[in-house]
Length: 248
Image 1 (cartoon, rainbow, N blue to C red):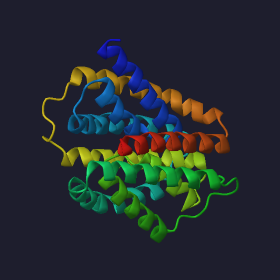
Image 2 (cartoon, rainbow, N blue to C red):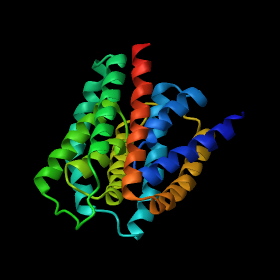
Image 3 (cartoon, one colour):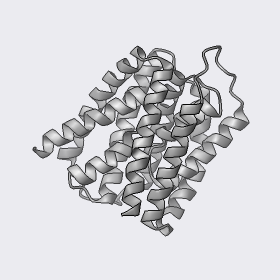
Image 4 (cartoon, rainbow, N blue to C red):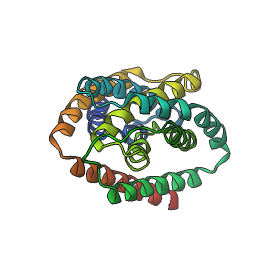
């Protein structure tokens, strides 16, 4: 299969994940760029941030038009997480790769377990407490800074389980957090991965954008509990794969 076809297929899958689940894009994008498209880990991480930033921003617009984005909550999350994310990024190079992989898998598994236990709220929207939102955002920023991902797969469980945001609003709001975190991370990585192959990244990103629109429509057709279970199963699959990789 040609590199272009692999880039298009991979990008479409990442877009579907971001559009429908509000996360998982960078978790899927980095392995695809490394194992399918031949990028180095540093180049794959940087390229993934570019793809996820563009795709999540486009998906965010679509969800915002439907009024599902909790802007205040998302901005509190993003603002509170920027500083801890920078500190976490500085700490990450000092941690062995296998330990980072295992920690990533355990965090993903814990988030999935919480999602499976926590039912989406069917009633009125829960008022946002700035203190809780800021604390959750700071914790999320620290974890994502160390692990080097966009953070949507953690933001959705935090929004649902910690702040009581309904699943569909959590998916939409997490896209705001992902966009801000990805752009900030890209700014700090400027010049660290020269020679990126934009002939691969561009079609990858384009397919991801189109996939995000389809993912958003898919999310509108699936009930909150079903969407939550799907998200949790995706996290468990990622966690299992990463634990195997860490042990090998």
